[in-house]
Length: 131
Image 1 (tube, rainbow, N blue to C red):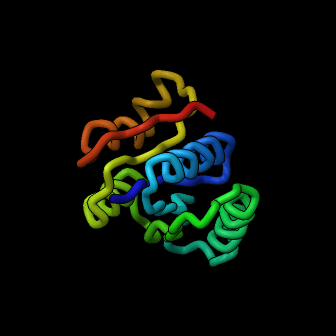
Image 2: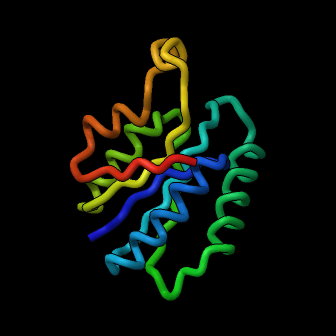
């Protein structure tokens, strides 16, 4: 089985990644890290490369003790919730780990909530970690 984690270069993203590594180690599971940094179709590759470098630096800081770790980039233009759910379905994941941040009710209404979509639509258990 697999644990899927959504990563963005924020304190919430780092907290989710650290917890996902701990869960993968404890459960002896494969870990799939999805770099969920949003990039726009017209954006050059610099933002995507910077986000990937940040994610790899964070992964390098975490003792992985022989864990099977697969790192993937969210497809450009794709919604993070859809990407995480699709990978969880593809890999037969038994857990998705996400980071949460506090948002105002108006912010949730205007921007939607990836966390809510993942919690409601995930094919497996979801662990929400505060940053």
